[in-house]
Amino acid sequence: MTKRFWGEGAIGSDLVRLHEHRLRWLEEAGGEVVALPSEYPDGYRVPTHRHSRSQLLHALTGVVMVSTGKGRWMVPPEHAIWLPAGVDHSVEMLGDVAMRSIYVKPDALEGLPRDLRVVTVTGLMRSLIVEAVTLQPNPDPGTRAGLVMGLLLHEIPNLTPRPLGLPFPAEPRLAALCRSFVAAPSPRATIDGWAETLGMSRRTFTRMFHRETGLSLSTWRQQACLFAALPRLADGEPITGVALDLGYESVPAFTTMFKRMLGEPPRSYLRAKRTVPVPAAAFAPAAGQPRATGV
Image (cartoon, rainbow, N blue to C red; front, side, top):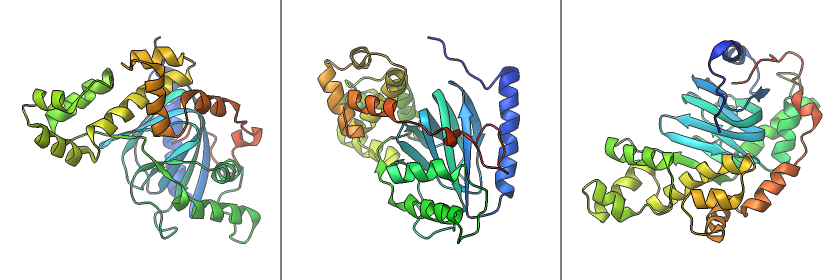
């Protein structure tokens, strides 16, 4: 199936201009916390950019892939990604995406995460995010809107990190192996095979891979396979076909990996995500907020 990419042509140019407009608006906005809604078509790529606020990016629908110079992070439903201020990043939409972003000044609260991470979005946090995008910007602290924004801010440090990042090594030969694996993931990749390809001992390779990525090859490989599987499953492809294409010998083996990474088997995970209602109010930005495509 050929994917549409909306970064080119007349429609893409309009989205880019709207994106730039919202970046400028965001830099000028007051208040410690700013909430913005965004709607994106399947295949759209937000070009590399940065902002002076940290960002909690949550997709009510669809799957988002965030790329930085250090790797890629998958943001499936019921998750969000925390992007510290000043990090250069681009965003790719896998499916039509209803995105909700919370932008926070770096010094707004002691204890805010300093590292980039994917986190689980609790029911409380999801409700706060949905409500926040309907409120007026920069509310007074003692008002209902101010209390919602304050509680949202204080909940950010409580969100549980999940292993949905895919860091890439800086060492060129190892990076080439990782990119080849991402293009055609398989659970059959082994430490001995990769070490032999690089002309290293198993011990030397293991130390280098962990030093370069912070992960073992086994964990990194599982996360790469999950990255390849989620968009296909979200598009409705059968679990059996996805599992076999990724090199798993059986659906139970793939299900075991999936459950280890996301906490539940693929059928339960996808069923829950498809039945979560999205309130109509969540799609209406508050007065004073730009109605452009998000950042």
